[in-house]
Length: 360
Image (cartoon, rainbow, N blue to C red; front, side, top):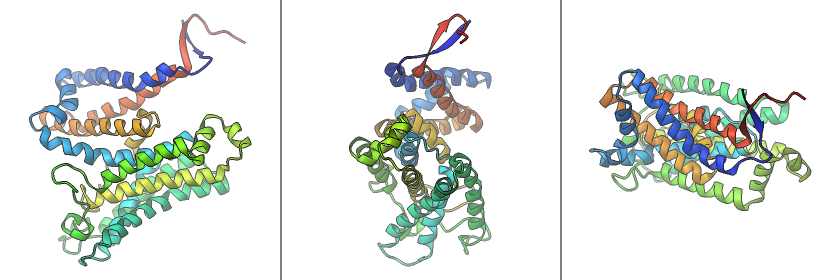
């Protein structure tokens, strides 16, 4: 019999190796999944990880890494601040949706006016939308002690109903021949989040993601509030005696994560997506949880993890079109990353030992 024994101290080596081991295990078991579906596992893995970077049409796919990775990094940075402090925002998908609705609504309110002020106003509105949605579980937790996991998650489904309502009602394109969805913001120059350098995928959302990484790094490494976040997550009792205000921390962490998720939604709806539709949200808010943990809740790690996850999105689309893999298989493949990361994380604090567990 093999038992788990708690380590005297967490293993730094396992902590650093866990993401790499998780990726390798995902490739192995993902290959087995693809083989069970009747596909060549080696070809499938190669298509997902190689084609977007070095394949025949890599010049077309590479800009997509920035486009797909930016919202994941932006959302994951916000989530990581709360996760480090033991504050669990699972509703970033809803905040992402509300940011998109607020941002698109602000831009379309001025249609067809031409002004350089419209896009900055959309940015502020998108951030506000995400912040407001995140402050609902924050205030309920501070005032009534509710569970932020359940409240934030349930609000995702409320946000999805708002999205459907806006697509069919207030934001519906009056010139859209009755089809649900707003006007195309890509055709409205003042509200379009266009590429800053043509053909690169670099838009203002990508810039915001890099700024968020720098902000989070400086906050956690150099600022007193960052110290409060770290000590609250690592030693709650020590945080209490050091004068950390738990309510203030909850409001800040949830508010910041909502704000960044809202920005991600706004930049997406004004750029790559182009319009508010019923199926606008594609799960970035949930995938960002994987990105945050795959990056070890470290800003630079999250940046790299966001690129890796973007690679699986793009490679997965290629695999679907070239190899006929079902979309569900790609989603399972992505979910394996988090599963194996959590599994290997177990060995950061525990080790295997042959024999029966000691009974105390």
